[in-house]
Amino acid sequence: MDRCLWLVIAPYVYIVCSRRSAEYLLYNTVDGSRIQGDDVRILDFLLSSPQYAARMDERQLEVYSPFVTELKEKHMGDVIESSADGFFAGTYPIKNLQGDFKRYADKLDYLSGSHLVQYLHELTVYVNHSCTNSCACCSAYYKQHVHCLSNGFTGRLDVNVVLQRLHEASHPCLRQINILGGDIGMNADWKYLSDGLCDLGVVVNHIVHISQRRHLPDELFRDRRWTILIDMHGWDEENAAYDVNAENIHYDFWVHNEEDCRRADELANKFGLHSWSITPYYDSKNYDFFKNNVFIDENDVFLRTHTFRDFYRNATLNSHYFGKLTIMADGQIYADVTKPALGNISEHTLAEVIWKELESGHSWLRTRSRQKPCKDCVLHDFCPPTSGIESAMRKNDLCFRSKR
Ligand code: SF4
Image 1 (cartoon, rainbow, N blue to C red):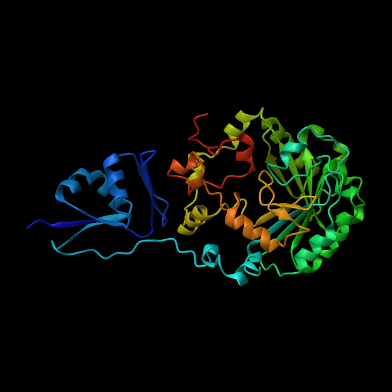
Image 2: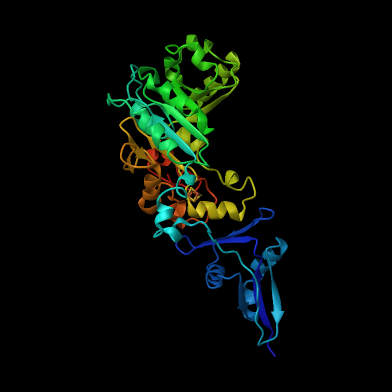
């Protein structure tokens, strides 16, 4: 009598198959080992066995023998035997989002707010868009990272409306509010806004270009948190004399090439900066710098052991954008400043804006599995989410697989 064989894959193995790129990847979430390949017979077999167990006959066992051996060696599965009329009952992982907002789409009390505002964890507020500098990069860089912006708009944000919106509901998960502008020193209301937020129990971070630092009184820098943006091309050593050891002040050098990185390191050491970072900006002339230093390397992808939690998060939402909103000085609210506004702070509650983004937006839920070419790549749930850099470079595969 024929043996009845079952190929069983362990429930802690994450399986990704792509018909389009003709690849499969089995990843052991316990120790990070993996089996990756492009054998079409195995790909077909995996695609036809979505529940982690599949019947196989003696001929298949022979054909798949190297794969089965590797599966056993890496503790990712086994072949077991049952009687001819037997069956195999096993377990396999499924994504189950208990709090999935789609379940509540028709529930008015859900839409009214208290559930929705808990998604908000970072808010960026521009109090103005005026500045006397004329940085060449100004109109492009705020799309890549949180960055000051002067755009010709001469109005000022009504900070009372922002305070009212933030105080009309509790925001249990709100962790940080960034206050910036063109030059926030040109709108004295920033301080009123900053003081009005102190009872929310969140970190309030103020962001200025280094040239604007000297126009602000020293006492404002003693007990608030600041990020000072440093343009390497406009570096003036006189500017660096401020606050270098203060724990509440972070210096962020924006860099375009290797020389900028080297100089940032030199300056940080020379002035003994307590807290500093470098942030790469794409300026359309530094593609090679990004390719050599910023693109995802295969070793980066597998540097740590990924968990099912990581995969399900990456398959569900974009963790770069999710939970973040930006209010511009004209009151317009964005989940991503490169996409259309979701509403205006003078007309819409934060809950209404959040619902609009969840229901029809293009940022919080913009996963790699929905974007070309990543959706056809077996690594789409491993890679970090797309951000403003991908938008600026107009390509999502900033990685070792990129053909350009
Ligand atoms: S960035 Fe996209 S194409 Fe590149 S490895 Fe990640 S998922 Fe694949």
